[in-house]
Every structure is written in C-alpha cells, then in structure tokens.
Amino acid sequence: MINKKLLQWLNIITFVATFAINYLATGFELGGYNTGELSDLIPNLFVPAGITFSIWGVIYFFLAAFSVYQGRDLFKDNKIEMPYLDKIGYWFIISNIANAAWIFFWHLQVILPPALILSLVVMIIILISLIMIYLRLDIGKTDISRGERVWVHAPFSIYLGWITVATIANVVAVLVSAGVDPFGPIPEFLTVFVILVAVIITYLILFLRKDWVYSLVIVWAILGIYLKQTTGNLTVAITALIAVIVVAIGIVYTGYKLLKK
Image (cartoon, rainbow, N blue to C red; front, side):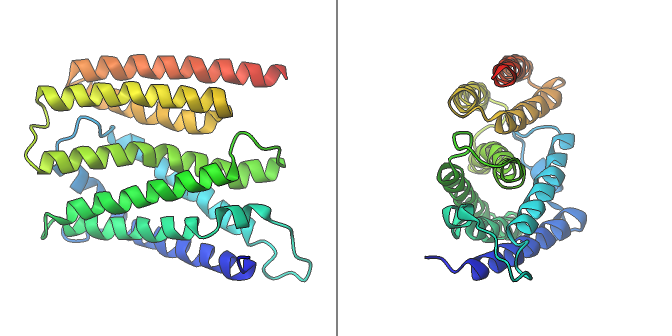
C-alpha cells in the first residue's frame, strides 16, 4: 500500500521543480540557447511550427491543477478517498524526474553531442510513464465524477498526446545528428508514414476509449507540421492537412455519438 500523504507531497514537489526547470530553460538561455532554439538547430520534418509549442502552457496548467486536486486534503482532518492515486502510483513522479532530466540532456548536447541520445532515452521513460498512468487509470472506459475526469484524466490525456509526438520528433533528431539527410527521401517517407500511423492510433483511441482530448492534441500537433511545411516539403504538408481533416471528422463523429447518449 502506497503512503498517500508521501505520494501527494512528492507529486507536488517534483512537479513544481520540473516546471521551474522548464521555465528557466524556455525563458532563459542554458548553454547559450533556449529549448526552442536548440530544436531549430536540428532540421526535422516532424517538428511542428513554433506556435504549436504553446500547448505546453495548457499541459502545465492541467498538471498544476492535478497536483492541487490530488493534494486538496493535505491540510484537512477529513481525508478524501482518492483511489486514482494508488493507480497512478509513482509514475507521475518518474515522469517529472525524467522531464527535468530531458531538459538537462537536451541542453548538454551543445557541448556533448552524444547527450542527444540520452535525451531520447529519458523521453522514452516519460512516454512509458504516461502510458502506464493512462492504462492504469483506464481513461475513457471508467465511470468517474466530472471533477476527476477534468482534473485527473484530462491532464494525462493532453500530456500523453503531446509526448507521443515529441518522442517521434526526438527520434528524428537523433537520426539527423547521426548523419541522415533531414530533407532526403527517407525522412520524407518516414514523416508521411508516422503521420499515417498517428492517425490510426488516434482513431483507435477515439473509438475504443472515446478520448477526444488526446485526439485534439494530435490534431494540434499535425496542424503545426502542416503550417511549418507549407513553405517546405509539399508532400508532408499535404499529408498533414489530410490527416488533420480525417482526425477532425473522427472527433466530431465521436462527440456527436456521445451527445446522443
């Protein structure tokens, strides 16, 4: 049995620390570059337009809300039953630590290029942590309160959606640093292929779990790829636009079915 109070505090502390590290890395130059500038240094067909990264504001808002929501009885005598805490376990803490580690390795690549590979390793740890949370919470399949749906399930749907895309972008960055031509036929084919796979996964999430929140994040990310490639790779841009339309239709259809119930 996990100690509830310890878990609540560790969730809060590791989240605040991770947010602070990310804020410093985004707002200031660590190693001579901020996080976004480092991304621009590596040509990558899968990286979306800069405006797309504003979703981090949404992600951190909801993760902060989750941290507050799960800790709302810390200073009360009457404790609240929170079965979702046992389900999440230490996975949120692991994701926070890995998130902070990713920032470190991502910036370390400036003076130590092999650190880029380590950034991919910790990105995969974040992804696995979020998948574990998603599956253990059984998001989209359980009957829960509105508060829990908004402040527990939604934050991890949003976060997992974005990290799914970020992991793929990180893989491409490692391939480019290894010498793969970022604008050659192989990256173009892989980008188109991955977009199609993303559409398939999103449809599975939509129809098996009715998780339109996760799906919206994927639409946002692919829309960002389209916006960036309209003046770049036309094949990728057209594929991304078609993918956005197809997933949007799926979201509307799923929403319509949910409203009819």
